[in-house]
Picture 1 (cartoon, rainbow over the protein chains, first blue to last red):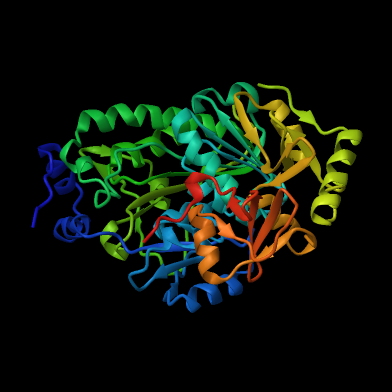
Picture 2: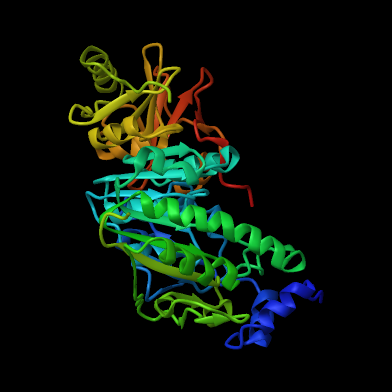
Length: 314
Length: 152
């Protein structure tokens, strides 16, 4: 059996975070993640879809932290079923459903998904909004927007606007406009290495640092697009503190009107955000961020921060 | 951003007449419909349009529900799902095997001759979109390639 190749930088990173169980992490990288789906209640009643899948012999188990999420227990190719093609189910990683659960969009709200493609979280947001309110799903990459458009169409969403723009420029036309913002930032993807071993082989501190500057700009941009009292969730699927705690630390340092909120999701095994990494100390509030490691649920690794805009900023 | 073109009342009325004639379906009179080029019609909400006017780089909004080809309305899968049980004309019921073939994009042989150009396929209570009826009595499903089942 082939074993995963890791860059020297990645080895150094993993051993620089004492709470990571490196052996379990490497084990999880070598195995495919458990398959999971979300029932799309915009198109059908949850119980009807569950019945249809059961008739096909699909065995499901509820994911405790995701309202419409289910683990697929047996070996079925869900992506090649009528239910999938018709948009009754959406294949989505179990932990990847968590950021939208934390954001908790409501019908009637204005919601921005700043880095939306390929649309898993956009379609999940739409489901929570039940056709009321508006979602702006943005991405900078036209090729990825095609996948986003297809998924929005397949899920039957009528209240979504798809835009192509550099997310860093959004406050120029949408400052203080949204009730909720999701920044699911591009990252070095150390939480989903089992899907792409190349991420481990090519990982470097330099690339992570470079990305963290973009991530910080996107987080600031997303925050500026919030109304007073609005909520932003910043999420990545990586483990590097440079792209996670560092970004949020700098965000709250530059935005005194930003307040971090605690995150609680039933059944999801989470660790608190790191307060120190490589001799750098972060704001104690960072402890309210959460880390989910891939080996906890045989699923993706994620970092999430929930930020509220308390007042108009300086 | 391209200008958002709302379907005006006369175009909307013409669209509804076609829908009624072709599918016996109730109309979209309480919905906001927009034109999206080449006879394509999208469904959205008035709030969505208001927000879109404020945004930059808009690529699309709302849901593609139908295309008008001359005097015919070709419903998308979503368009047919929204109308679904209200479709009373030009509907065909498929067996499980036929539904699978339909979603693979394969033609379905009709039992009875039909003079219409398009029909909507149903499998149990699911709507599978429109199919084009050819002279040889076969229906060619209008399932986009990216939504077709792979043959096992």
